[in-house]
Length: 217
Image 1 (cartoon, rainbow, N blue to C red):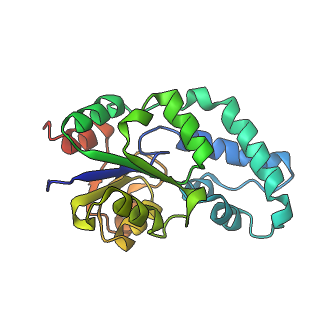
Image 2 (cartoon, one colour):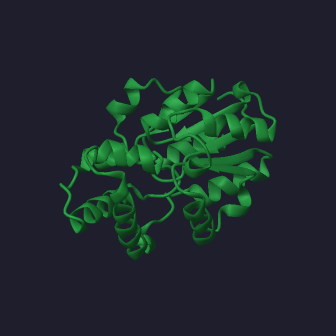
């Protein structure tokens, strides 16, 4: 693996095993307000997108005036089961080792700033990251805005940075920012879908990903 000065991680489905809970929360929220319940596949597709893009994809006929009702019900269901969302194996040790190796670390996520702050606190990972960018602070994935902001803020050239994510939105965002990208197939999008987006690297297991990132093979 080439040397990277900065590693940018997606959050949901990459560092935390949350995809199934997000899908359940989306489907439950839709049922609460009388909408057709989206399939697992459609629900998984929007993980990582900003709120507006996710709503428009899943519920194109839903008036924007009702977005608030849906997001409130989603929040209720998500928070009710948030304790079931845990870090993937190896994340805590791997993040700590990368910091000790002198890497800069960042997060680019479809979560809101409030949501990421809560996740940083509950996992204890917040202090390890040099910067983060959320969907409510700029353009949603797959627009490269999040990565361009982080590169500029941290003073890192695109060819010295790596994106790690579990969706095609992450891969396409990295392509737009002219960065290498490692796709992980244990999150929201499956291996076939990710392969079609042409990631630089692909990892099927958390253990292999962290062995590679920390060069401990």
